[in-house]
Length: 275
Length: 357
Image 1 (cartoon, one colour):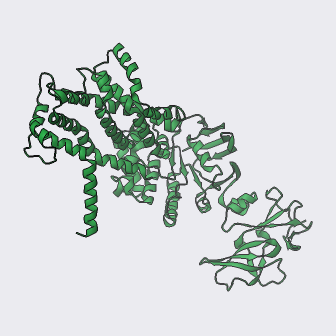
Image 2 (cartoon, rainbow over the protein chains, first blue to last red):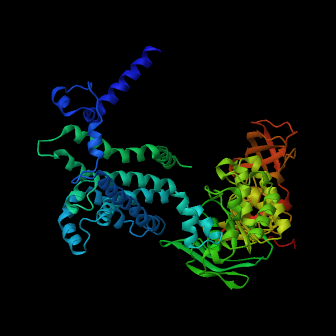
Image 3 (cartoon, helix red, strand yellow):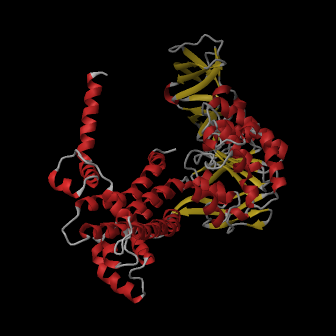
């Protein structure tokens, strides 16, 4: 191997290690027994154990990780699919008919710039009135609002990239609006739907604030549930268990990202290059 | 098939008049070409007929049915776009079948018609491909196939050949012409290319700045242009225009006090004389009205294209047989045959000299 190739790899591996150090440290901690965590802070594990994972994955009378995972899955699915369903027709209307292009669209997109915590108190009060507190649906709806700006932005770009001639050709071919949307616009937006879904799902899965405020038992999502593992038995933080639960909680979005990676990058490239 | 009439059709964009009161009837089965420089409104006019642009005032009739306010899908016209506008996510077969499926035709009928269109356009081998896997010429044929399967009332073409290379353009032009013959369909064709206009059209509509300049057969327009714009727009190189004034008899006075005999009594209001480059001949006649120096000599194979600097008359382009031994810098005399001259008045309108008294 030539020296400059070795050097390149050296820099690359170093950067990867430095940037991923927190993840690596967490994973290694999860493999250590409590006694070793206290004695051995190094990255080398002397007596690797899966005991922490067993603890996390075992259902106890107080903690049920499957319950949290299920809650997160449902809430994140609602929170990532609903914005697409809502934003797609809006995106088409903004691009093709110009509705809301000057005020509504910038306003919705800038919603992302607001710290969402300012909605917390009014939302809590509203949810308690309509009985959405501590429900997966309620949490999902809020997550949908969180994701709506991103969804709208991505879908507006996607619709704008469809050449207008395609829609005109379809209209000349006799297609009325429903057929035009379903057979032409919708299929052409598919890459954008996948991108929007993946980003939205990951954002929704990792959301903590509203999960903490709006749920107590039945609908507690994984992010909030994970914090319950930190102090299970009064004897301070069990770092090994805490690390294990973080790893488990991070797996679903990680897997989704890995599986969808090709499609996301594909659609981004096709979005960047005209043609 | 159908007859399409435009009655005082106008179109404004934000107060800017892009189409100024156009009236025109395209007869059933006619091949009508809209031609003009870019920005003349030819595409806008076509899109108004298609229903893709709304009409500010005036009306559009298809077979005496008022379609001015109808949506494109209710007008039963087919359109071929400059950018092909093929549906990228559908195969060639699905692209061609789209309109038939939209019209909810039975499956067997669709299959049969798609197969027929594919045979006509030599697309049989590509039916299961996506448009991205086709060449430009094949894409254009799919676009045409998509238009012909549904037997529309008329075909609209919006510069369909301008994205093709020169050889393919010629080929596809011939295909479109034979398609028109075999379908006997009403076709409206927009182009900025005068060769396409001249070769394809039964009738040409020359547009400029949103107005019709002249309507007529290619021969009429070429041989009897109604105004300076049409005279210069059709023909390559462009028609030469020389300032002129009547001498009150059978001649006109050209700049530099040269008299040109026109064989007929010259009308008083002549301001310009036009003559096409190919009708000027180089002569040895020392008394010729126009003499000049060859400024530029381009060899085009079958002809030589010359620019002759004729002093006060400006530059005059001439097409000469390529066999001649003409070189840049040579002095030449130009012969302008009286029957090849066109006369225009102050406003650029055609003036016809009265027969000699």
